[in-house]
Image 1 (tube, rainbow, N blue to C red):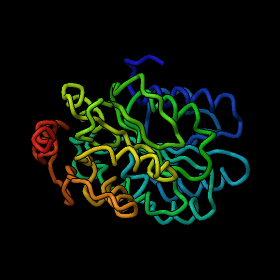
Image 2: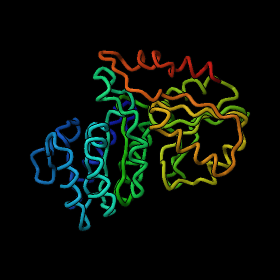
Image 3: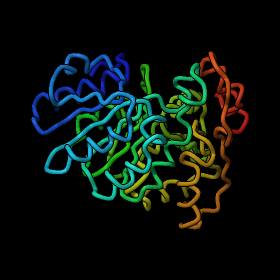
Image 4: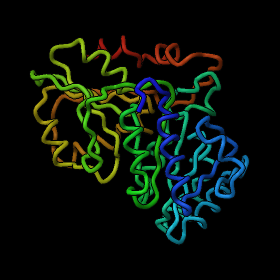
Length: 302
């Protein structure tokens, strides 16, 4: 793996290798394009259904019905909200072996406005009982998840950002744990729990702070709850740092977990507000500053 590759290239290069070896592996899209898969477009097992997400989901459900795997990719907002009922019933209720890869999470495509702001899809998919949800933060995790895509059984929603995301190449991710320390300091005082792109921002700050650690919470179901809670209990202050909205991301998932295990630590939340943001032609960093959820505001909270 080239650590200087775009996270999408790392992920989809591995998917391409699996596709070429496995004749029961299908790739589908809703008129989206990724560089690594362009050469496959003329093949029968690559299906572009166009801007028809409901139909796309139903096709994938049929293809994955008998010992096959269907991988769908496209912008996360369009692959979730537009066809939620089809995902819930055609895929999830049948425990279809389909993987939905949502590109463009958070404000990664900030210039295009609220239609492209992936800030609520995470919890939307979490609400479907049979759906596993994985939020990829870095190149390292993208490589592991894509290489092991066939070992992840059942309907799964995977979010994938863009750009070079080198959080920490030395992190040994365990898919059964569902979380990992990306920065771990000896002095256990402050802890940031984040997911996806914001892990990068949290790491940038934590590497310069003596008493600040970071956990990447990447698998939102079927993770090792007891192990996570036992680690959290060692810290005096916990900050949930999320690019998703307060109601649409990891915050309600973690708060539910804290209540279950009676975690009464001092908990702070820094996340996108629960509102639609009608701003266009604005880069991601500027948007985060406007919402007061950028690195400078995280420092103030710490």
